[in-house]
Length: 340
Image 1 (cartoon, rainbow, N blue to C red):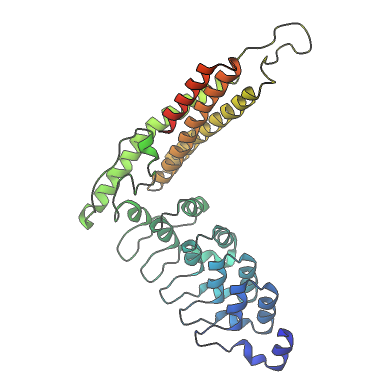
Image 2: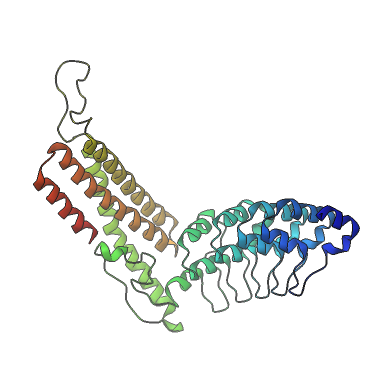
């Protein structure tokens, strides 16, 4: 039916409804790959049509997470990535607002869309600003990890993305990048009210220094966990078989379910603690305002390592001294203490 209509009335491709949306807008919105491809083959210029909100078909594809359709649009209309909506936002801005990680990856991997990475909207906000303002930590890691995002770019308020993260909002546990995790670990909190323009840079620098000092504690804890769990891997609960024979040197409790969980939790604790150390090291090497995000990641990894270490301790006790009521009580008490 669509093919017949297009042959009989080719002008329908460019016609828009009362909202300014063309057939391509609707095909992309519905995720109809075949129809969208056919429309672009017949008239690639339809990709440049904007609706009353200034949205192009590429904007809509980005908001819906349709990366295949975005690829089709770029192949037929390479310059369509330059289109912005009524407030100057490009397809990458839209993808960040809608949390479409697959689209963000696609933009970062597509050469034709490279200029979108640092393109600012009419308020001067780049995609990095947008991700920071929206507290989208995973997207921030993607953009910063890519290396092309300009971390020093300023919006019309004169703020960088880092300034937006700690300058304009309340700097405290509820708004800090590490959320409540640092409170759970007993770290000192950065408190304060809303910052005035004159205090911005000074407060931002002070906050960054606070996180750097806190990172020493995180590094020490993560290193200690890594060392302890590494040693635990070679000093198994129950010991080893010293008898002569094919099973000599094997762990005596290797058939125990609790022992299996000990191995798993101990391995996780060591892996996450080593990862935390590596992240802190990378943050120190990269430096700059992005350090706070490396620190936040290391805190999360260390906290998971602490939980895994407590689990390893409990399962190790169960494996070495099974079916003992007081061991279960001790294990539950430790678990509650760690989680509260």
